[in-house]
Image (cartoon, rainbow, N blue to C red; front, side):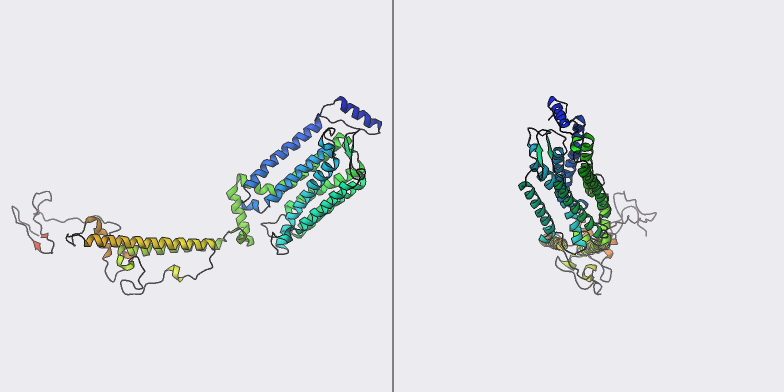
Length: 479
């Protein structure tokens, strides 16, 4: 495929002049246009890969990423067909000489009509949800799209069966595909009807919820498409030999694919770029719009009030668990690893916890799993307390030592467990066992001996509580 002025290309130009046509040879300008548009579609391919990789990102998911990926492939098919029909490359000796296969099936049916129908399908899905209150799936959702595809298929079959002189034929002398005016009129009438239907659907959904409202995007897209359609329609009938003129064919192809890229990026560009550069911030903004529209249930997003109530309830539950665990730690006989007593140690009835006072709510799957996990954790904590109690009981019962000889490591637990009967059961949390106080100062008489002396003259308390006075040697203790 050459873009230089070869002898064959010079012969083609002279032959066109003999037939009464002015033919501009294929040159470096055509090559530059092909390279630029190919680079643009290469960038689009990277965007499509990134979009499909992040297709579960909620703002992208709302734009139907699979449909937009198929729309991109249709635009590529359209570009391949334009290279043939608009005369940007040499056709002789290549598969591009099949004008019906590439010009009709690839360019028109898989390209122009398919990308138009996919965008129309997106708009119809929003119309079906917000105007007809029907789901965004099922046979009824795809029925209009299948009907349109059926009509397009019939159009292609008829074009394939008819004579090339009526539809499109290859002219070997000029190395170009030529399409008669009646077939062009039928083709552009079909495309105009498609986009008028797209504009009508988007007009009907212009006031839907703000989270899914694409009135601005689709208005811009329809304006671009109608400008390109108007230009192409006028050019097709005013200058049907436009592929012979370099400026006209370059402008036509560039405008077509500039519009297709603008439409594609107008629809998907905002969520895609926000997903790339400010993912979490845009997700929070999008969730706020969903909450404002009352559509958070469709994406498993809690409202602000529900989220606050849930977090507050979890905090109260955790405080209940803390106090109940503190009761069991301070006095194991209260729970014993089994149940909470109905009365407080002072004889008053125990008030209900915040968890038991709340009304049960309808649980979803996540809350049920959380409840099961909480029950397992509570049962495990109860078993642990029971094992600690049983181990402490057996170790104490199996020892021959004095039962009142308490080890220093257990003195704090034992002291905190023996609370007065009329005291607050939660008062142990603020006792000296949890927050040790500094030792009290010792007041001595001037006649009292210094603690560093070898003998003590203070009274000693034995194990049964009787006071004995050690033998006095030297000084006499005076209180």
